[in-house]
Length: 78
Image (cartoon, rainbow, N blue to C red; front, top):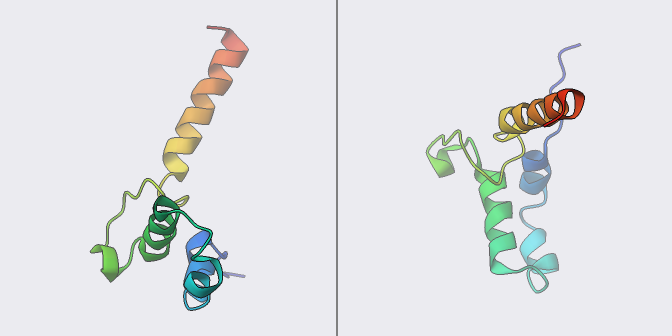
């Protein structure tokens, strides 16, 4: 079984046509930009950019490293 897992960007892409009309009036400009950045991450629209601070996929390694450091500090102490 080699199914690809659905990601946040996939959801934003699937809802791209409905989101602005349905939610545009309640989202702040920075929220709209974050959604667009996540939706377009690793696509031609962002020139294949691989380091998008808004994208959960791009930040997975940084998040894992941060969590490991916090866990090490908790076990050993400061």
